[in-house]
Image (cartoon, rainbow, N blue to C red):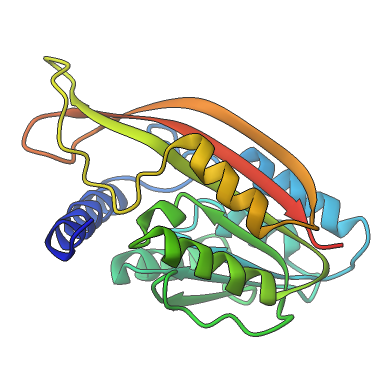
Length: 237
C-alpha cells in the first residue's frame, strides 16, 4: 500500500472508531464492543493458575472492550493493565471507563501506535493484540511488532492475537464491492505462515479461523465488513 492509500485508510478507520466510541458504550448491547473477546479472558485465567499478580499489555485497546474486563478481574491483586491505542479519543474514553468501572488504579492508558510503541524487555506476563495488527503499514512492520512483543514477554507469558484477514467491504444495499481501506490486508494462510514462523519454539495454545461479517457506517452509504478473523494464541516456553 502506498503512502497516500495508507493515510486514507488510517483516516477512514479513525473516523469510524471515533464515531463508534462517541455513539456507543463498551460492554453494552448493540455493537461488537458489547463483550470482551472470550479467549482473552480464558487465557488470563490460565496465567492466573500460576501467578498471583500479572502485568498485561492490551495493544490496540480502543475504549476498553478487553482492557476493562481484564482490569475488573485483576482488581485487588496488585496487577497492572497497560492499554495502548493510536487514537486520542479512544484513550480518553478508556480513562473515562476506568473511572466508571472503578479500575483506574489498575489501568495505565497510553496513546501510541502499535507499529512504533516501545515494549520493554521482559515487562509483561500477557499481551493481547486484538484487531490492531492489520493496521500496521506492511508485512515487515507486522513482523517487527511481533518481535517486540516477544522480547517484552516473560517466560511462561502468553500472547493472544486476533486479526482480520482476507478482508472485503461491500455496500449493504447493492452488494457492490468497495475499495478496501485496510492498511494490511493479508491472505489468511499468509498471516498464519508469518505467525508460525515468528513464534517457532513457542507453545501454540489456539489456532483458528472464523468468518466475520459486521455492518458498518464507514462510507457514504452503509457497508458491510467481511473477513476471515483468525485467532492465534501462544505461550513462551
